[in-house]
Length: 237
Image 1 (cartoon, rainbow, N blue to C red):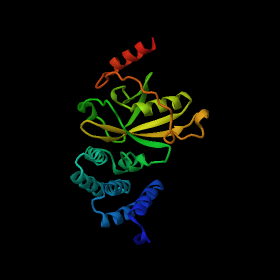
Image 2: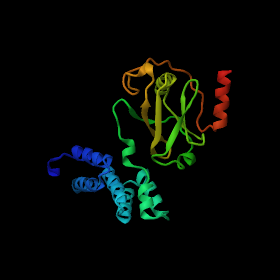
Image 3: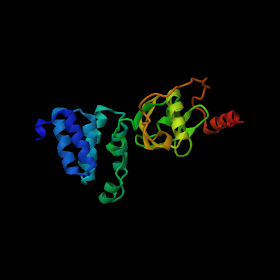
Image 4: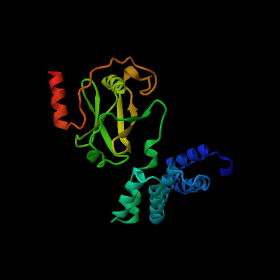
């Protein structure tokens, strides 16, 4: 049956197998994809993750090493390798605590959006982040910052999206945010709508348009949390 599937259909089947936690089927499907497309990084990462979930730690490690040969900056593979190399627990413990699932970034039309941040922090700060790491909104009067769990500034959302999400959150919408991609001077985040307030119950967060009034940006690149908070307090006084 698999032989009649297209690459796109096989990829969907691989994701569905993982969603159902059918790791054996996920291994079979991803191997099938790689027979035709041996450099498909997403399939290699999915295969590596499925192998880990079945306790095949060495085989999973080889998959992530293969990814890094193709893409030295791939964070999913890099983080999995770090976890494997520092493994001091039993295999069963590792399987339960296995890092970043490739399903974390499963897209849903209207409910999820990948956004490249603006005014990002220094490369030193970005290098401390990891793909899949949960981050948080810091709401300001005219924009939205992205911060880590300790409040460290990472970047900001573009003005038009900030304007829209501020309106939604004011009415009760809620979101989760995770790091999607990191490079030397850029970072993108994956935003997922998790709850809608009554006013926007029938409106998706990432579809349609909202009237946007531009405003003057102050230079905020690489600001510390304290500097940013002081400006916010001044704006509200």
